[in-house]
Image 1 (cartoon, rainbow, N blue to C red):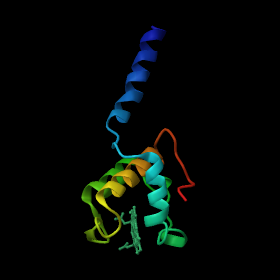
Image 2: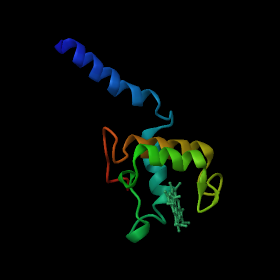
Image 3: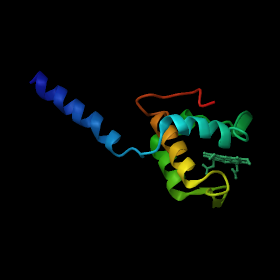
Length: 103
Ligand code: HEC
């Protein structure tokens, strides 16, 4: 019985991971600091991965809009945005590794 519940837990944990975006987490952190933190550093506009849940970040990037305008190429290249998306989703508030120090 115990083995079964461990297997079930493992399967449940593995599920969301398989759906993660395939960009680079490390590069995403770098680009997030470089491309986003310039405006989202302090006050009401401050953003860290923790500012949103995984679903909320996914929705934001899937929409591809920022302040009603296309994100690429204005904010970053599509490749950089994929890395930023990966970083933010991997460390979102409800992720297995939440991270406050996105920059
Ligand atoms: C030139 C300054 C600037 C840069 C660079 C910038 N933002 Fe923003 N961002 C803003 C402002 C201003 C708002 C608030 C606008 C509003 O609410 O209409 C905003 C709003 C947002 C929001 C909340 C609105 C929503 O649709 O949920 C998110 C999330 C966001 N930005 C993410 C990012 C990310 C990720 C990057 C880097 C790829 C980035 N921003 C780069 C200025 C910037």
